[in-house]
Structure formats: structure tokens, C-alpha cells
Length: 114
Image 1: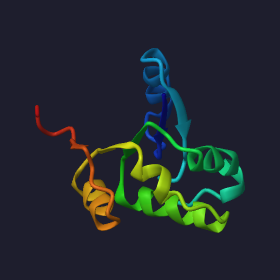
Image 2: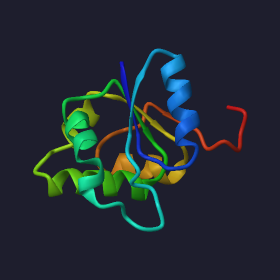
Image 3: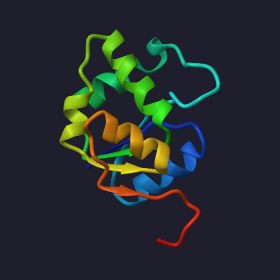
């Protein structure tokens, strides 16, 4: 299974955990104070366009930036996200997914035990 993660925080920890669980992680450094130029992760965007099993949205801005980066390459990344299990880290990421018509399957913000 392939899992897409659009974040910078703890990406190495996330990668290690994903691999330990048998996932192939695709890391997208779109969540930053400055946007990362598309050429730096073009191959990852193309891999995402082929589909993933699990998508973790850490921020709403990151989700939007990811879709815009795909669009800049002529890729419609909504399609692969429609077929993926979608997890949102918190309320803002969940709201963005909902606004895009990509309902999250689960939402957690790290502040509650549920």
C-alpha cells in the first residue's frame, strides 16, 4: 500500500512508521513557511497521480498547495484522492477536504483521546 503525507514536521518519523507498517510512503514537502518549488518533488506528484491507498492531510493549506502543484504539472490529483482512504490531522484539514468534496474518513487533532 502507498501512503501520501503532505507535511514537513516529523516526516522522517512518519516515513519510518509507515515503512514499519508495510506502507510505501510518498512524502510531499508542501507544508512550509515558503512554498517548495514544484520541480523538487515532481516525481512524487506523478506517483501520487497514479493513486495511493491512504492520504494524510496535515493542513488545509498543504492540501490546496498539493492540488495546485499537481495542476501546474497538468495533473488532476483529485482523482487519486477520491479513491484513497483520507485522514485529516485536524479541523482545518478536514474542512478543506470537505470543501473539495473529499470527505475525510477520520479526523484527529492530537488534543483529545478519541
